[in-house]
Length: 122
Length: 122
Image 1 (cartoon, rainbow over the protein chains, first blue to last red):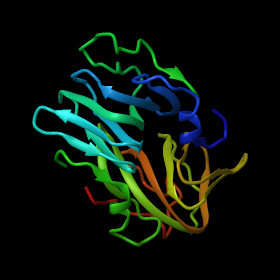
Image 2 (image 1 turned 60 degrees about the horizontal axis):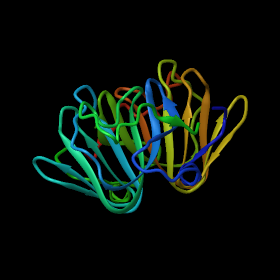
Image 3 (image 1 turned 90 degrees about the horizontal axis):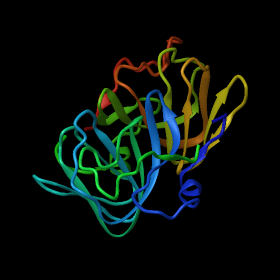
């Protein structure tokens, strides 16, 4: 990826599809991704890993069975492994994700929103 | 750490010392940290891990032997493992770091800027 800064906003300007994370960098065996979301995702769980959400713009709610977490710009939350969750956003949200390489966005839930692989913008 | 969003700016408002990262969250065996820096750090290397810098405010230059990377707000860079680097900032920079638990800020370089442990704000 060379000795160049990754401009998060610039990367987000390159696509418009929702729920389809794009890889913008790599940290050891983790990937750094940007994503746009709107509407409700599917309830799912990642049994083997935590998942970091950092909101860049918009208001994101991460629904969990024991309570919701609301995230605005500049706020982050780590969904612990094994915790069922379902992101929802009334309006478009732009976010940064950090998670191990190979994580499936819908966990074990499957369904039409499953991204078979994450495109790279790196 | 409970089901609460981490507000990056709020965490950054809680301290004023430079070059002393504070832990604000955990992602598997990685820590998410906030840090304020100003001036020049020390040249150092992390032999065993990459290191993610995401600038929140200010202008940070990461000097490397084969060229510098300049980062403004909303820009990130991953310093690859084994690459000698030295952050420098003319004015205060606020940044987010993601790196494995136990990374020493000065790598193997030591010196007065070594933080013996990173305080937690989580």
